[in-house]
Length: 94
Image (cartoon, rainbow, N blue to C red; front, side, top):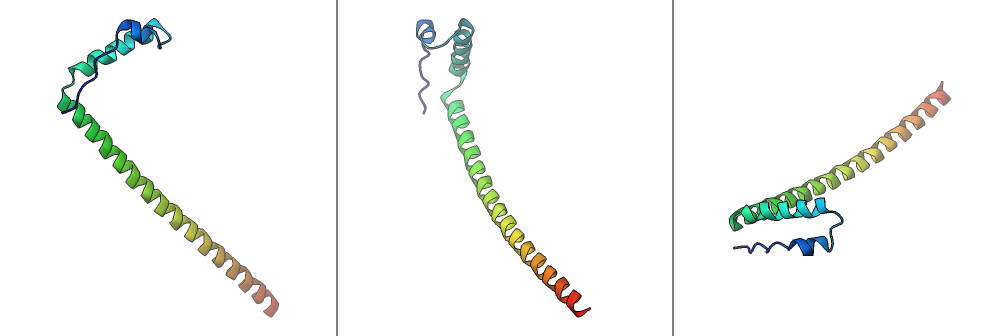
């Protein structure tokens, strides 16, 4: 079970927030957070963890794709070189 942190007092919020609107927004955030059950909080943390894992997997896939692109670029470069050499050879024979 997760412990929900006790909200800061208005005076504490005013000590580091720049405006009264920011203080009110923070108080609202604490009010909403206090309505979450520890289980809801744990579910949110689990969802964030799952999303982080999915992002890591996608990043790995991006690396694979980048490597494949690099390999294809190298292969295309070789094909272009061979094609140019064949064209030069064909011109010499003509």
